[in-house]
Amino acid sequence: MKFIVSSTYLLKQLQVLGGVINSSNTLPILDNFLFELSHSELTVSASDLETTMSAKLEVESDSDGSVAIPARLLLDTLKTFPEQPLTFIIEDNNTIEISSNHGKYALAYANGNEFPKAVSLDNPSTTTIVGDILATAISKTIFAAGNDDLRPVMSGVFFQFSTEGLTFVATDAHKLVKYTRADVSATEVAEFIMPKKPLNLLKGILAGSEDDVIVEYNDSNAKFTFDNVELICRLIDGKYPNYEAVIPKENPNKLTIARNQFLSSVKRVSIFSNKTTHQIRLKIAGAELNISAEDIDYSNKAEERLTCDYQGDDMQIGFNSRFLTEMLNNLNSDDVQLEMSLPNRAGILTPIDGLDEGEQVTMLVMPVMLNS
Image (tube, rainbow, N blue to C red; front, top):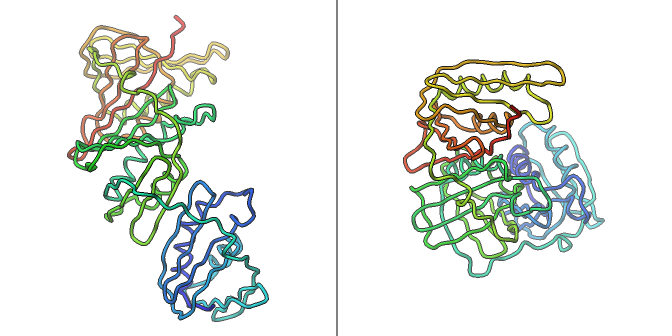
């Protein structure tokens, strides 16, 4: 088995796939890339058993076969080469020889048949979505997903597909983000929970991509196909909590404010907040928003006054500044609206501008009890 490939082209593809490989694997074979050659088409795969990703590359060859090559060693070697053709020759003594313009490098390989086979999806449902839209949906929601192993359903992003549009939801019980697209729809209704790791991989690859992504899914797995890449992952098993029930419908108190100004102020004031609760207090009266924080243990306190547009009763409400900062950072509008009903009910943060046609973002942040 022998093939010739450009060093930078191979490195670019392998760096994408390398994100799948865990730093410590239970099965040693998973520390390898699987190379499957069929004449001039080389398929390279990486897996951690839950997620498998493969890419098809054009190479010069007329042979076929499959081998598993140590991923770390191969990546470290390729990073040092300037652009040039590399020749890979699989020898019989279980070594693979790489020849460059300046030298030869030999590394041991494993049998390709030992590599776990990717799952095939039986009669899946299919939806097509533009890469950049999917990447945006992931990055707008994934930060709100939880890290609690005891509640695995909350550690992923909930995909809800219908003929009206697509909805993506993430929550960790303290904050919730719901992102909807009315300009993209599915042919049938479907719901599934995607784990974080494959989503982070997709987010990185698809940002700014105009390519269509074909999403296929059944009860246990989902598959994303685009360009020359295919990613298959196991879905999180379980029923997602009824998030609609948590979103308060009647919110008479509405605060409108410039996002950057609000964000900077929250960031500054939160430096003086208690290091365990990160609590900040919003006091709104008329057109004035007063943001304050206090750390009684260290006698630190801060207070800022901002002008805002406010309709509603005067009120005081407490939030965890870390959640508020994360949410404001994740929006790219000039102005935001914070809707509230009572100091013990969730506040709803929405962008006022900067959205595409058919795009909607709703962020929900739970209040914290104020110590008067």
